[in-house]
Image: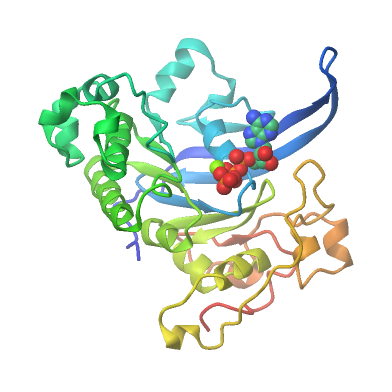
Length: 333
Ligand SMILES: Nc1ncnc2c1ncn2[C@@H]1O[C@H](COP(=O)(O)OP(=O)(O)OP(=O)(O)O)[C@@H](O)[C@H]1O
Ligand SMILES: [Mg+2]
């Protein structure tokens, strides 16, 4: 389990406010007509604190990578704000954007395609020898090309490239999903070591819930372009309040038989609805066993349930469910 970072200052380094990204859906080849929009990210707010790791989980297509790109302004937001030290990144362009981007770097999922095959490692990273050493690669490799490295080594190169400009924030979009399980742990350990050394803040996107728990201080659960629940890893994993989080977690095998007791497996029925035509009210209601009329009529807002108010001053446990006041149905008792 990730220990709470003792020195994590409770200062947000990124503040995301009501972030929206709609991709227009068009028809026609010559005269394109907009016929709708894919609501990839549909009003998301959260903070990333200095020195912490915020994990983001959720099924394929829920908008995780789009959030990552919006945070760096690689994709233009439809609306909403992303404040980095008081500056709204979504409104920046040109030089001002470039200056901010130095501080926010990205490590991509696939170390096989995200490195330019025609550049040597030295060209890719910049100030090399030292950084190769920092990420545990032999500095003599500086004139080699990406194909001369293994997947784990390539991801170390990707991380070294991310570090080259001394960033404060690293956005990791599935950084270890393409790697063998044995190599995943090495890369994760390296990332944790670097975080301590350089006081980095990580936004860590992944499918694998156990990896996310291992590395994250807090975790956000996304569903269809919205944040369903957010809290510390303990709050999310041991006391999930949103039925979607409960369903996601119930699918994770629990090795400890004692912890397994009393946990029921929740099988979600139906497919994830299309983000071009999401359900009214709560996005999850079409697959939720608790859904009532209210859920179709009223969008539940992400908020701290009464029963958690004041119980923990360090971290808020927020849930976007009309029934978040009810006691957990699954999770550790
Ligand atoms: N450039 C684009 N144009 C149109 N639609 C897009 C574009 N990029 C993403 N989308 C759509 O937005 C939604 C969210 O995509 P996104 O890549 O953010 O999901 P994700 O959570 O990262 O999924 P995965 O876990 O598979 O990586 C999907 O429906 C996707 O098809
Ligand atoms: Mg993605």
